[in-house]
Amino acid sequence: MQITDISISLRDEDKLKAFVNVTFDYCFVVRGMKVIEGTSGLFVSMPSRKANDGTYRDVAHPINSEFRQEIEKQILAKYNEIVSGQSDQGNAH
Image 1: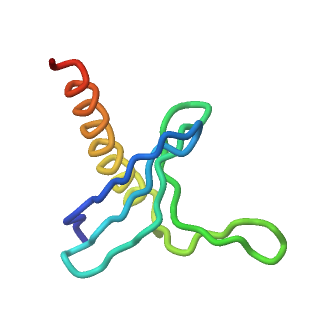
Image 2: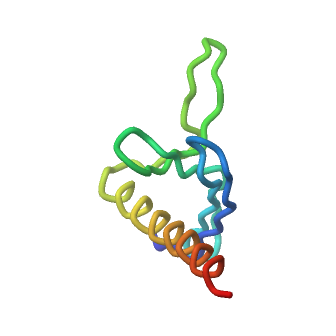
């Protein structure tokens, strides 16, 4: 399974940095991933819903750690590309 598109919508909040939609093999999309600023840097949170007991449960998530790492690597690379592009545009007058 290949990631064929990553769509990022930036947010200007303390911890929430972006919402992310990822398309796989041009035919399946997962919406509602998030780029979060954690205590040890940025990470990707899977889409989740609040359960009746107040906890949050992932709606969709990778089955193995290798695929989770690949998804996170590609999302954070795209996020960093967008963020650095914005700062470059802000400095170019």
